[in-house]
Image (cartoon, rainbow, N blue to C red):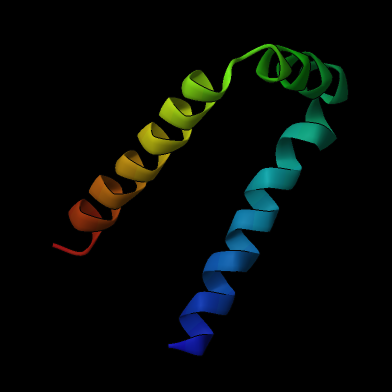
Length: 62
């Protein structure tokens, strides 16, 4: 279990690092746009990401 958690975190860090590496200016623009969102919009985006992740986990583990 701990091994799988470590793998998941490692993959997350790799994927998260690709975008700033390939397009640092694009990441700055995206973060500036995110900064303009109100709390409800940001929470909705977070909830949407979590739900998509749960659905993807369900599909992959079927």
